[in-house]
Amino acid sequence: MKSATVTSDAIEAEAGLFRNHCYIGFLTRFSYALARNPVLPLFAAALGAGPQGIGLAVGISTVTGILFKMPSGAISDIIGRRRTMLAGLVVFGLMPFAYLFITHYTALVVVRFLHGLATAIYGPVAMAVVADVAGRRKGELLSWFSSVCIAGTLLGAPLGGYVLFLLGGKGAATLADFRVVFLLSGIAGVAALVLGLFTLRNGDKPAAGKGLAERAHLFARGIREVVADKRILATSAMEGIQNMSMGALEAFLPVYAVSVAGLNVFEAGLLWGVQIVVVFIAKPLMGRVSDRWGRRPLIVAGMFLCALPMAIIPQLTGFVPLMIAGAFFGMGEAFVTSSSAAMVADYCHARHYGAAMGTFGTIFDIGHASGPIVTGLLVASLGYGPAFIIVASLLIASVPMFLIMVREESATGGV
Image (tube, rainbow, N blue to C red):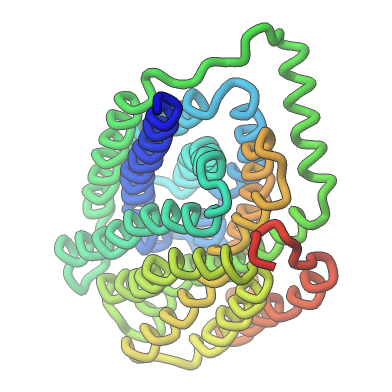
């Protein structure tokens, strides 16, 4: 009887931890989305940036993730998840206020790089915590956590565009208008930090008896074991390529919608919001499907679902057609992302979840960063149509290699 009570208490504690991480994740993504899309590309354009400069401004914070996600995840395996997450929340709470002082494009690039530390430190560690408690429900719980974070993005992205629309109307937004949005982002980031301080104040302790040299050895061993598994690398690569297309669309759909299709900034924000709504609704369901029936078919189908709208968006000009294309892209994203992180966790030892999610996040960010940067170069030299078709072709071309390198195994428990 006592054992059953202890087990019940442990389950309840894990459920409470999961809920609290969902609340914090929502606030962090809401804050980040307010300062990112469609506000960030339009802000870069207002500072005089061209297509290449816009792509760099959007993608540079993801470069931060490339550099710091893997070590952050591996460090959390050694010193504890909660301490590492709290460091990321400090960046979420403080960095948005730096945008208030930006008057030149170079300063924007620097601030964006530093702001990227927030997601680089917090993101992979939070996913590792969910994987720790998920058991055989990794696809479902990782997808639920992601969907809650997406809900923050879902509200933040169109709200940022709507605030600019209210302040500037149909005319070009001024720098003062943008600062109002960045102030709101800072307030939300502080809220996430305060909640994190309350939730994580009694965090996990570093392992007793482990000196600096031993921890450094464990850190290096964790990374080596993860990156030596070709299945983890190949699955992460699919997420990275899908996120390359997402980064391209995130950076240039607002600019295309306003400058070519003739939509206002609020409508541009809604286009991205529709895509996020679809991911938010579909992802937990697809996570359950992947837990039961396997992850590989969903990943393959998702890449094709993302490629089709990516190729045809530059041929569309109306709000409704662009909205439908964004919805299809969101469905493809839900297919891929509901399965890829869970598949990485399936192939990893629990003690290395931080390193695995850090590696996954690094490859994720390589794709996300290269999307806007490479697409900016392509748009500048070839135009929207050829640029988007090239990105769509890369999505399709990635499928055969994935099918060769990754075989569905019994990790999901469904096959």
